[in-house]
View 1 (spheres, each protein chain N blue to C red):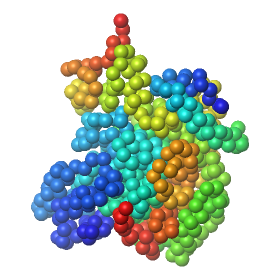
View 2 (cartoon, rainbow over the protein chains, first blue to last red; view 1 turned 45 degrees about the vertical axis):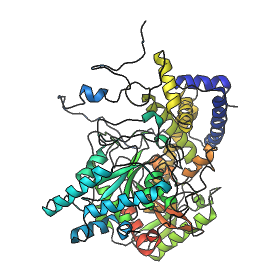
View 3 (tube, rainbow over the protein chains, first blue to last red; view 1 turned 180 degrees about the horizontal axis):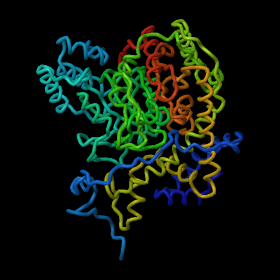
View 4 (spheres, each protein chain N blue to C red; view 1 turned 45 degrees about the horizontal axis):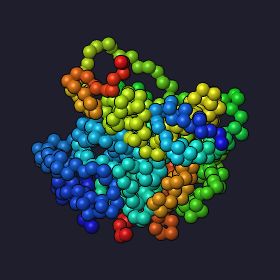
Length: 95
Length: 489
């Protein structure tokens, strides 16, 4: 197995996911099959090849720095699962 | 069946112009069709009946007063449920977005509305567009209108099934690795992924941002031309949208192909697992284009065989990053918990389905220290080779033709336990995403006279006009697009 039991749990922790033992086992099997499949890429010599992160030549567009319309506080809060008039409410972070 | 349902967008528009039909007649006809068949097809996740009827009456009023907005004014369309608007909720096939209504609107939706189009409803999809069968929806699976026991393809399976069942004359979908073209192929309709950057992605729920692109789906290639002209163009809200003029796409559809060289990647027709019946239909379609005057030439795309492997490393890496925003804080589903970190974990574990978790974990793995170069960087280098293959191939041809999907629709449930098998559905489609190229699927026949197959056409960046011209010319010479599913169980 390319991904051991400890590794799958540390990946889950990084991704903020919880996996039951059964789920973890199934995920290891699935990921393993996929990683074995992608091993075929090793047969391609890419020593001299530049990586493509993006197909476009991206430039950062600049614009004038002026105040424009944006979401109101009400609109921004409307979808929050818990909120009061001005803030989103989450479990206590600082004791 | 009401004869209105069989008409293309252009035909509907002409009927309105002649005064034979009103927008209200058309919207009522399609809403009636949804009532009649969608309990079997299950393409829709919500229908906007009252607003649609109101807008149809308003469109008719505007026309009477001489204020028509153009050929699409008053015509209905359905949208994949990952295009946001304050007008409706967006669930993206996921429990984690239950109840979500965006406070802003996708640019494509704003543009469709500006052209006078009426959003009839939103269509089912694989969760976060991750899947090839629409079975990964948290709501329900969708059926293929040609065979209700089979999948419609995915991830834009709801859009494809709705158009095929004539629940709407057209739809928008999104395509990251084939999610417009493959379901279009399996449902016997036309679907196009435009050039990366041709259409603004603002307001499209992000899956893999360097690959995602919105595109039109319909019963006629000429309808895709009409729709693309509306949705394409630069948008200051999406810095990857190109500042290039939008051509009059429909004007390019003159039925001719005799000036074109069609590249045929013969090796790809030997891909293991590809259905010989599908391959035969695609070969026959290429011969039809030859009879229409096109020349065929052999092309080599030697790195296409590595497309799937590179694609699933890149798209999962991007997805693991994009989906970090779903944490139960600002919107969507939240699980109750004592601590913030526990809330994140429980929200995501309860809110995401299995395929989404699988891809997040794979993406997290390939981006993690010690594996980044071996997997992610390697995949990006392969991506360069795939692009170079196409660049070389287009020195000797104008359009490349191959199958869209490796085979026809399969029985619901048959492949849900085998993710790798599902990924291989994208064999012929992912390379256009990796290279950012425009690509089109056009109906090219039926396997065993029952299950649709699609001809896949790819061309140079921003040359959608040529792609549409070839697709339209093929359609003029064939009758596949005129067949309708019987929708019997």
